[in-house]
Image (spheres, rainbow, N blue to C red):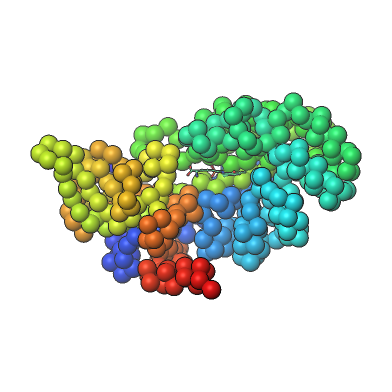
Length: 409
Ligand code: LLP
């Protein structure tokens, strides 16, 4: 069983701040930023953070201090990146399915557009002829931990398919657009570097088609091991095989290029834990499974329900307890509201505090107000050990005040 980082600190936070609470460790975020920089250091590079994974401003500030830029996908993300202090040139705008209105608003932020549709490329060219642009390609190789997160290949809505390259070049020429970057993002939670390499190769081969090219962005998608013994993304292979191969290729390309990566999960997933309290134990008759109900649910961490994703669950209140099997459920009125099914966990008692691990990416960011239960609190543990509330818990009455202020006149 995976053991949480600093279990004593987590227990203290639960008793002082209550639950449900997301806890993030600054130290882990900085460590991942530095590790990735080191892994790609052989190449001229730029790293971006896909802020959709976790947009808490305190986390964004840490990432900004580490010299990493932003992959933004909406006006909201552009605005937040700007307010946190990211320079426009360190932000790439990779929104999909946007309106003309969004395109014009986004352009006012001064960041480079990454466009993955011929129609949008043409509209962009008409509106902003003669500007720089990056195009997102679909290398026809997709990968990821679940079909919903595969973002390239035949079935994906993302990117310009390679066979439409001549049309993309024609549109660019017509509007004097300078394609300074090409991009791909083939999926999320990639574990096999062979998948990544197949897609990387497609972009490297395509590079000579673009005379103005200054960079290739290989996207994000680097997986993390959610369970002990799980085959993890091969980070050593990434550093020792994939990066040197890109370097070798780059030496025969006509242009001097920089190579970009833009992970989300890798930087923050392992830094975050969701703390929740056990509210009930029940069985549906003798010999039935045991349900351990909690005060959180799919409204706070939807990954197990949405993707059948695995998150380790550790009983912080009984770390040495005997293992029994539980269905760990939430307090939302849906039968699928379940963090784990038939999972061995240290004996659970009512009021025990459970730690749901590796919840720093796509946890809070995908949470909702379903059933009108407020969002969890978010707490950041500084490198110094100092505990800071980085997003306050809102009471149900304040939540309803807010709702009524938005809906009544
Ligand atoms: N770049 C682009 C254009 C993306 O769309 C994404 C994620 C990333 C980078 C970062 O991918 P990462 O390194 O985090 O895998 N909610 C899902 C993941 C969806 C990812 C969407 N795009 C999950 O919880 O697994």
